[in-house]
Image (cartoon, rainbow, N blue to C red; front, side, top):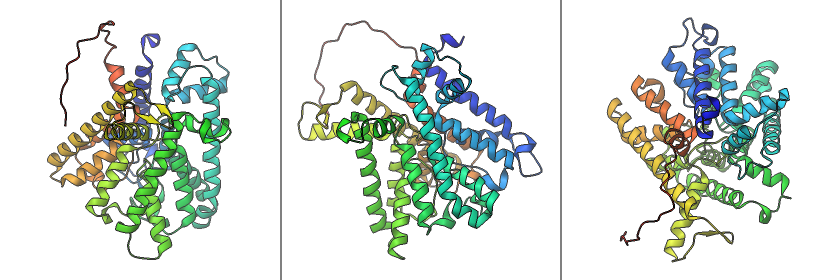
Length: 439
C-alpha cells in the first residue's frame, strides 16, 4: 500500500498521522496540569498547531500542560519543523537502515531539493546543522533563563524556546508570568530579542540556502538562484517593515527599545508567532502590514510556513518585467521559467482565497470585526501564531477552520492538490492561440 502512494500523499498522510498521535497523547491525563484531561477539540488544535509549527493556542502552554504535555508539544514542534521525511531519514541514518530510491525521491520533495542525487548527504547536513543551531540557541539563552528561573527550569526554558524559535513555532512557556504573555516580559531585553530573532531568521532561510552558505564558499555569485532570491527578499521584508514600524507604530519611548520592538515585530510574522508587544497596540495599517508578512512567510524547504518568499519574489519580478515591457522575467542575469511564474500565481491565489474566505466565515460565525478575523486566519494559514487574543474564545466550528488552515499552510497548497487530484495527461497537442485583453 505504501508503494502505491505518491510523494505528495506520503507527506500529507505523514503529517496527518503525527497530528493524530499527538492529539491522543495530549488527551491523556498525564499531559494535563489540571484535574481533568484536555478535551479532544483542544488537544487536536494544540497538536495541529505544534506539528504545523504555528503557535496559535487555545490553552496557555505553561499553565495548561504538565511537563509531559510540554515535552510532547516540543517533540511535535521538532517533528513538524524538520518535516516528516527528514524525521524518517534521521531514524534511518541512526539505525543504519538503507534508504531506497523511492524514499530519496520523497525526501527530495520534502526539502525542495532540485534533484535526488546527493539528497541523503544533504539531509544529513541539514539534520546536523539544525540540531547544532538549536543547541547554540539554547546555550545563548540559558544565562538569561537560568538567572530568572533557576538552573533546571532555566535549562528547560532555554531548550524549549530555542527549538520553538528555530522551527518558527512560536510556542512559549512564559505563561508563568501571565497567561498568553509570550515574550512580553523580555520586550526590552536585547539579548533575548536578538537570539530569538536570529533563530527565526536562520530557520526560515531554507535548507538549500544553508547548503549554499556552507558549501559554496560563502560567495553570493556561486549560490543557487533560489538562495539569492531568498536572501534578497528576506532582507527587504525585514528592513522595510522595521523602518515603517519604527516611524509609524513605535513613536514613544527610548530609541533602543523602539528599535528592538520594530526589529522583532518585522521578524516574528515570518512565521514565528512570538510577540514582545500586544498585537492590539498596532494601528489598523500596522495590522494589515503584519497580515501581509504572515501570508508571505519564509523560504521553501525551511521550518517556516506561508506562501513563501520565493512565491512573492517571483510575482514581484514578473510584475516588474511587465511594467518595464521586458520579454522575460529575469533575476541576477537568469531567466525564470514561465511554469514557475504560473505556480507562484496559483499558490498566491490559493492562499489569498483561503485567508479571505476563512476570515469572512469566522467573522460571520463569531460576530467579530472582519479585520480581527482576517488577522487570525492569516496567522493560521501562514503558520505564524500571532493573535489579537480571540483564539481561546472561538467556537468549535471556527477552531476547526483554523485547524484546516494550519494544516494546509504547513503541507502546502500544491502538495494538498497534487496528493488528492491525480495527474491529468492531455497529450502533446496545443490549442489554437486567441488574444484576450486584460487591464
